[in-house]
Each structure stands twice: as C-alpha cells, then as structure tokens.
Image (cartoon, rainbow, N blue to C red; front, side, top):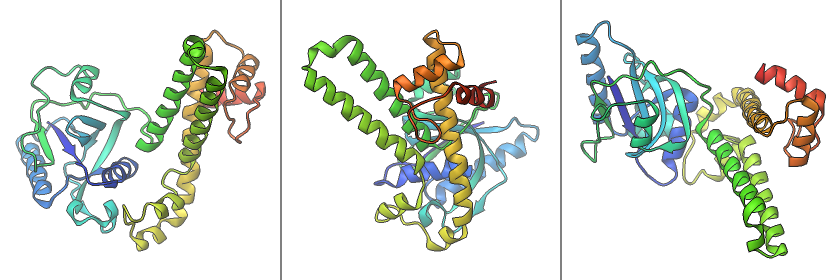
Length: 297
C-alpha cells in the first residue's frame, strides 16, 4: 500500500511544516479526522496482510507538488506538543524513513515516469477537505535510498545551479543582445543573488530566520530552549552536508568539461570563483585532492 499526504496551503506555514517533516523524519496530515482515517487504513492493512511489504508514502505541498518519498511506520502514531509550530490541526504524527527528497517538486506525471508507475496505480485525490489518500495496489519500497538532506537546502542548491546555467547560456550565446554595461550588470546581479542564497543555505533553520518569521510561524519557546545545544551540532553537520553536495556538483562539472587532475580542477574552481569550505575563492590542488578522497573516492 502507498499513501499520499498533502499539507495544503496556509501562508508560509506549509514550507516550514515540510522542512520539519523531512528534518525530523515524521509526517502528519492536517485534521484529527484525517489522522484517524490514516490510522484505520494502516491498522487494517497490517491485520489483513501480516507479512506485508513496507508501506510507502509521498509528501506533497499541494495535489501536484510531490516533495518527498519514504517508508512510513504504521505503528508509530504519536503526539508531541510544539511540533508543527504547535498547530493543533497537526496533533498526531507517524515516523518516516525518507528515501528521496525532491528539491524541485515533481508533478504526478513526473513522479510516475521517474519510478515507472503504471497508469491507475497511483490514486488521485478524492475529496478536497481530505488531506491524504491511499493507493492500495502500489508499493515503492524497492526504491533505493539516497542522501535526504533538508528540503530547503536542496532547493537553494538547485536555484544556484539554475542561475549559473542561465548566466553561462547568456555569456556563450546571448551576450550581444545586450549592451556591455547591461551584460556586466547582469553578471553582478547574478553573483549577488548567488551569494545571498549561499548565505541563506548556511543559515537554514537558524535562530535569526526563526525570529524574523515569527509573525508567520510561531515556534514554541520551551521547545527551542530544549534543543538549543543540539541545534549548534546539527547546524555544523548541515554545513558539512551542504558543502559536500556543492563539491560533488562542481567536481562532476569539471569532469564533464574534460578536467581530470586535482591541480587543474583547483585552477578551474578558482577561475569560476567557487567558494572553498572556508569561504575563499582561491583553490589549492592539495585541498581538492583531500576533498576528492573524502567525498568522491
């Protein structure tokens, strides 16, 4: 069996709920009645099929924006005060082991194509007020697990990649459509946007951002005090994961351009003005070698 859970739309709240769900490894549909419906579905399925395959779930921002795919624990129907910004509509939750996170949300058609799902197996949403629905004959538990970083971090990395690709296209093909001044200005604006996004990536889920968005999403003070120490550790780990993803991307980019040696890559990264782990723009061949052995080999 496969479940689809939609968070819906309510100001800035759904994005924070998605981020919390992926980071914490749990999911909940909006509304106690819907949570009861899921509980009954999971219970009946496990009773009728005692040797059942793992039950999978896709998480959606809307009916046609699939954010993540995972395996749901049918027994873990728990309550935690303060989760989901202390919104009582998301009272109960289920634990999930996320298999994939999609920085750019997939449509239903893209999701079916990516995982070779036959027509009719992935059910459609059947009632507007119901935030989850089941596909009884579908199971995606054989999908391999990949690194499932936070959704926000992956989405920000994807934005940077798109901006760089668009700028390269302009430089290589469309530069003469603009004046020299306009072309230089676009380069500067794109570089500034990339710098802001990279800075945001380092501050994902930070105290500063939570404070600025407090009017939109209320974070319970007790919960924040309890997790203050662990946040420092998780932020350091998250920065390491962000840099690892970036290095793998630019390493692959260099290989695709025919660059093989560590020292040639260092020159290429410096020329492209990619930032090192310490925020510098100049790369060293020995550093590239150590990062390659750490992240690639």
